[in-house]
Image 1 (cartoon, helix red, strand yellow):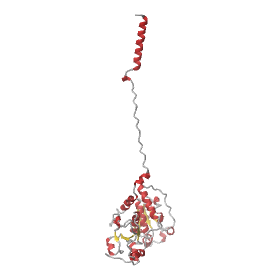
Image 2 (spheres, rainbow, N blue to C red):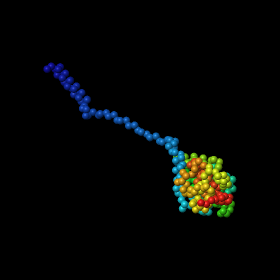
Image 3 (cartoon, rainbow, N blue to C red):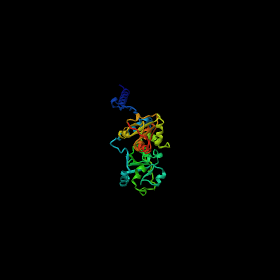
Length: 320
């Protein structure tokens, strides 16, 4: 074999070896694997307005006003009220535990109010819910206890611990004969607004605001109701919310008995088509009741001072 052929074979062999070394085996090669793309699902927060839209206004109000009566029993006869006689020593001993609201006119408040009391008139009850404390017991008073009954019912629906000072300044405080010097005349400032509401509370707050801003406290005097009865009108309904014993001793002609603790469970029995006049012993539980009834679309009005007001004007009563 010639020298040229030998060199050619050697070059061909070297070239083959270099190609094999550069390629390697399939097992030695790093295989590229394309990772799957995982799309992250981000849940958008629920729109608050959509959440509120899902709530049925009538259902929210009905459930809250029905539940209002759950803790009211015949045995627990305080019925969301406390007397001035019992309350004043408690306030004096631990004033930081109580938040006192005077609902009377600005003039009456300026002339003298319970020490520490702030002034929130009737028409502003719904607007001032956001200044009420949720860590103190709220005590509310007016002239007779009737409008404070409406106010504390509204406050309790909004989740506050509120009681009415029984009899108001005219029939609760005045009989104690403590003297004007026990009152203060300097105004107490309202706290800063600091409240956040649930969607259910927002619904209740709108209804409560509407109730207190109609330019009336809804209280009706006995002669007006007597005239309607004498006219033989079938276009009214009278509800007596006292107990069976008091009802049997004497009630307004045509009055239907629904004791105060039973209002929640028997609300369906009350007309939504007629004006409804509500009477109790002194007008104070009637105040609580008409607030709850009116929020449910019932045209309810409390009789001034209840059966005490009725008999004081020598209006007739009937017995079974």
